[in-house]
Length: 290
Image (cartoon, rainbow, N blue to C red):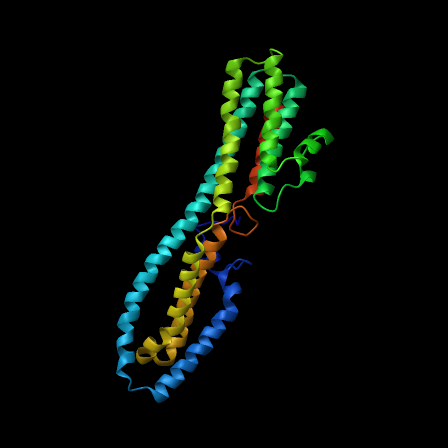
């Protein structure tokens, strides 16, 4: 995720990144410019008296209004997915901190504290990788026996929570923690699983295919046919206007596609790497005390 100062207008205007839509669409922008110039040439020199073309301008004004409503819906739906992902990761940070503080108050052995500290951090790392290409066991702080156990499972985050539940049950049987203690800790462990479930729902439920295709076709048709309505009023300047409109409309679609799956490594995705490291640091500070 790109960090920036929202109050620095000039720096933002002239700052380009690899995810900037201008660097992505420059070939398409050149094509639209040349295409519109060609339409303008033929319309000015061969169809300058066409009455129908003069009436198209009002039609495209109405279509532009309809398209703006679709853009609002598209942007809001994509941002809602991004923001829901951020809220769930924020809840994971809180549950991890609360879980560690409760364990500290129970005055467990250093070995038990180290065990839970490892696996709270492992869960954050695991869910980050799970939402991308799958779990990388080399990143996890696990014993050989724990790795053998996890490799047998299809859902690794649930396996890590299962390991913590087993340890808590052992502590309860040994009388180290009470039934009330187990119930208090259970809320936070359930929060871990709720977080991964909500994030999986976001990742595995993209915008419906038919809607996405319709929106792309609508934008393409609107921009490609736009010169027929604009040349009558703006002449060759229509090429600049059509290119700019194409840039704005397609940029919104590209940005929406980028943030609707917020768990990847794109510039505008959530900083899940940093948040996982933050959880590890918080838990280590709380539990690994001398």
